[in-house]
Length: 314
Image (cartoon, rainbow, N blue to C red; front, side, top):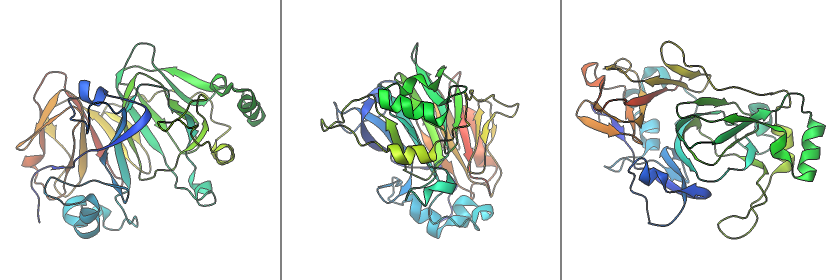
């Protein structure tokens, strides 16, 4: 089943109370219906509740479990993960998300959750859009608990003015929220554990208040994490390099990785071509290890085209 072309999956769209329609208007996506507020597109997902499948009916899990060397490369043969270790999404926030936290590895099992470290690349930011990340300098756990009691949690969380092209790293334990007016590409560990600590006193799509996880959040939040800043792009385009993913921003013609290496491309603006495949903004494509060096050449098909290169560290 050797593959010499990029592998594309059908996006899995998720309705959210804070979602909208900008994946349709900004990215040209064909959404499942004409009215639902879609907040997330799970573009590369190996989870039982949302499994990525190719146009010819092959699941990401099938590739990971049974074709690992030819698709993901020898370097990942020894990975102990039973599923592909990353989950990739596009998020459309037309309202503020809940202030939340993901459990760190040291606490996740005890809380019956999964750790989740993630990063955000802001593909579109409307004027005045904000992201919330970490605590304001000097805020203590006691201060945070008092803010929970009087409904002023947003006042003790650090606020960053968001701009198109910004990137923010969100390690497990960092309290955070995506603000309204943002279209974000999210690369994360393959986890769906989120503890909401404050949800702006709103109700869900069913008209009922959404569940909060205050005690789990208090056990997970890093109360020494003050005022993080956006990532600085390195000379080679690196945005984030951590134990779970290596993400680079690219805009120049060139070969992506080497034969024998698996790289996922995510087009954030414009249009690019890889081999015989054209990818537009919003498209994710997995370049399998079996692709030869010549087929890996990426060419911008439009001016100002940019894409992310995403790798799983060996």
